[in-house]
Image (cartoon, rainbow, N blue to C red):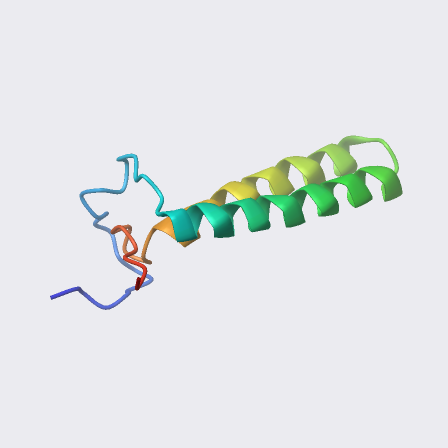
Length: 85
């Protein structure tokens, strides 16, 4: 039985640092999410003035894109997400 999500959780799921091969459905969602982040990055790159704040913004947007991919493939406790077929 899966444990409910606990934001104070100190134990990581055994698969947290393992590679999870995404399902076809997850690959499609990841591609859509990446496309959205690319559009946002282009617009921010165009609109924001050059400088450390722009660099910070774009670096963290990249980080958010990576975590979005993780959220597609994993449950809150780090276990592999099983999408219904």
